Image 1 (spheres, rainbow, N blue to C red):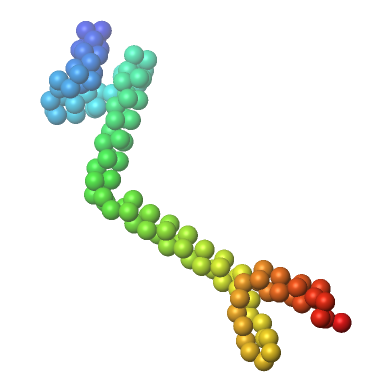
Image 2 (cartoon, one colour; image 1 turned 90 degrees about the horizontal axis):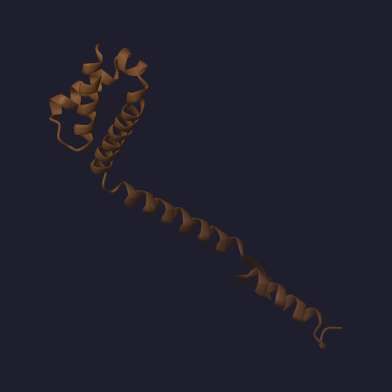
Length: 125
C-alpha cells in the first residue's frame, strides 16, 4: 500500500478512538491491523495493542453481565468456609472429661485452670 493508504488507516484509528466510526469501519480497521503491512509498520503497534485490550475488556464485561450473581456466590462460599473453619476450631478447644463419674464437656483452658487449682489447693495433700 502507499503512504496515502497508511495515513487513511491512521485517520480511521483516530476516528475510532473518538467514537466516530461505524461497525463496518471498525471491522475493516481490525482486519487491516492483522495484515502483514500493518504489523511491519511501528505506527500501528500501539493502536493494535489498544484495540486488543479494548476487545478483551468488552468481552470480559459481557461475561460479567451474564453472571451477575457470581460475586455473591463466591462471597457466600467464602463465608461458609470461614464459618466451618471457625466451628471446627471451636470444637477442637472443647474437651470431654469424666469428673465424679459424669462426662463433662468444657473448654480445655478452663479444665487446665481447674486442675491447677486442685493441684495447688491447701486441701489437697
